[in-house]
Image (cartoon, rainbow, N blue to C red; front, side):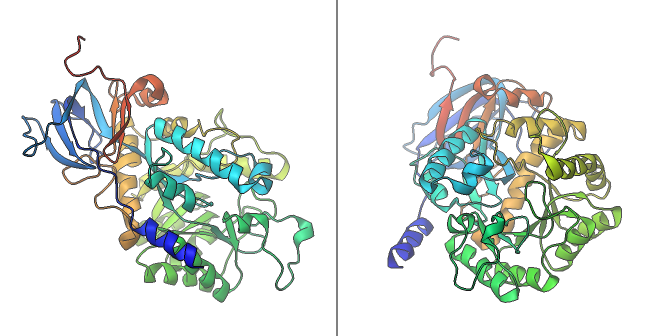
Length: 446
């Protein structure tokens, strides 16, 4: 008990590592606040982990500072990408491994996925469920390279809901019976009734969740729940919303249908994940309430992981609804977040960037970049006092955290440049620390 208490105190006290100063010159800026990059070249000064100055003219470093000078060669400097629906611990394993493998193996696999995620240019992720508190601490302490993680902790699910992956022989669960494997590892928290939901919500906040994730409707990958099933009662959702609000943060819900989304919005949630099957009246309600729509480009294309049997039918329903969902979001001016929701891939999540570029079906490249940087940064800030950093993310401005990418070309015109991070991303900086630099040394012949 006391060990866990002091571990949590140590996590709360973590400070970003200081990296000295870096002056990046001769770059066009995509600042995350508009859909275009700057016409003129600019300079950006990073001191420790913060952007201290942005200017078209010369920048004078602080007294006594001799910054590392990097010549961007007229390329594009942009904020690090943000994935608003990521599962840091559940991307790498297949479904069977996720349900049965030793937690030590899963943690090591998650560390490799985190490194690959950062090397694709994703410097922050909003984790939508899974055992990531340890991974987050390891990244913050510099033990593992990876993106900033905004953890939800365990996905809170009703019995038979989207987060219930128990086998039939484990039901019914007798009073006092041990938790299932997914609950023990922190992937899911099965809760029924107001008191149980409140308890599980408070537990995730206690462990360090920056927001809460509830399953409010059926899902594709889960076994027991058709898509049309509505999960949780308004009272149960309000219990989680109240717990989150008491901690200054918010609840987001997994839901696809109009009935599930309307119930959740009316109960006070601030964000909805998916919602590909809603009608126009529900879209109007989301717009009126200022609810974020964390929408994924789920299409039946070469990025899809084809399901089997009943799950395949559900997958096709969602795919058919995706086109109209983006149309409704644009028509009603709903705040849309970009996220991928890659699960059980058996790999390093390589479809993450292709999911971003798939948005060109509905948006211009500059709109997409803004969505995946500045807009997603605003969603991260919705966690209020639980936002664990000292400056904004997703933008290039004075006082923002120094998460930066140097792209060899103009991604606001050609988003496909980001699909080739090995050659397209010449510089990856997170928190002022350079994780990749392919630029020639200062003074080297070009």
